[in-house]
Length: 323
Image: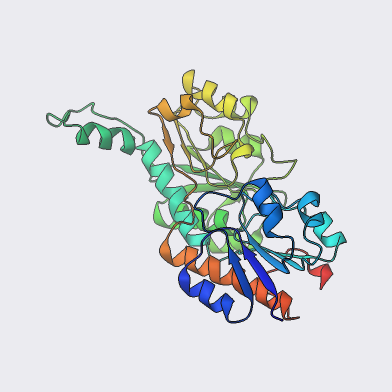
């Protein structure tokens, strides 16, 4: 009998078709995440699961799926998965790196530009018919070209953002991470500094760290107070990396100029105070939302699941020790 794979959200038809040729596939077809009860019921006889960040894959869920052999996460991050517990049970955990790097970096830069140049405010103003002619002081923002870009976390996406800043916008690029990346420094002009220096000197701060206990509320009150009053904070990583209460205060009291957010601390909840602020560009977690990227992610997630169930090494695995 073919293995059973549960897919917790609708994927492109061609990917489901490819999966169906090699496995019995059950898809949660609702656009909203399955409830906890529905998820537990879905996985009871599953050999594999293609999960999203909204699906909490913890001990309770693993207990409910005694046949499970692979958790194929449709994302780069795996903070929704108890990887240690899965590893203890010899369950492979996979993800989808690389394929979403450039689209997410594009969006991070789009957020930086939109926030710095007040594009959303200006677009709404023009759309409602309020524009009555050019004015020297109309929607003044801040330049991005030639300024200083601070990249917090120089992984794949962080490097792609740094490359855009240095080579496309002539920016001085600083990055903060535990180890210096000399090879990247030879490729792209940039310098490793401490987080305190980066925050103090950057005009745009872009966050690209995974969510871990060490990075939760990495950007809080003291960090925001240390930033330039003209600076823009961009987050396309994980919402809890920023202490949202401190960010609200920073905007209200003008510690920083603006923020561009694609992720939120209690997603999908977006605080009303952020939704009402004109100096915050907010997006509904669409960093990788291009047709090309989401299709590649789905195909990679499917390939990961099928490889494990077929006794092969998957294209990307988080816990290779289980193989």
